[in-house]
Image 1 (cartoon, helix red, strand yellow):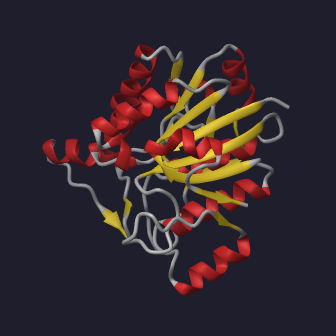
Image 2 (cartoon, rainbow, N blue to C red):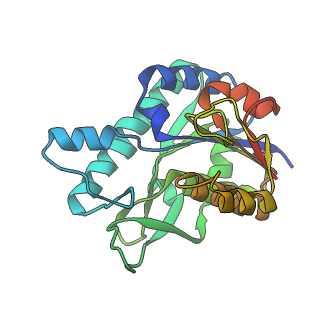
Length: 261
């Protein structure tokens, strides 16, 4: 079984041109089969503000109404995705940018309305990842770069969480490759103390996760990130690492970040 490295970069890296440029240089130097999933950052919000389109959030999550969907498709699938692909090409990495609609690579259902209607937000369907296409691209030496957008198979695009896309793609490919999933974001890993950037928890097992949640050490946005990580591990993903984008090589070599077991 061949190795596959799947790296997800968060919005905070996307928002910082210097950090993004440094990360893409590091990523381009990696060898072997690899893929990149990127978040959206605040660029869509900033552009929306300039266009007079105010972003709406509920519990910290973007509400994707009709106008906002047009905005995020343009920004995530166009501006951000193609900027990353062009930078990787310039660094000698033969990347190809994709939304979920391209080649039917990721299909999703619109999230059902319960207490909140988040609008055009997608949840990846069972067997929704087109592993054959990704395997074909990887076999040609291409590096897929996935935007946080899926499609519903009925002509509609859907805004989809990038962490979830990374986890779903990793799970789907785990039967074909020995997948290592790396979540890169602003901090050095999962921290014992959010105010102490050096207080990295080096390993977390499921029983540790439940205890750390109960203690309040792990909370807010880190909970769904770790839920995704454990879901990937249970589905056969070889390894999940969470850490800082600047430590990419250390994360891959096991010298940095938090390892999910």
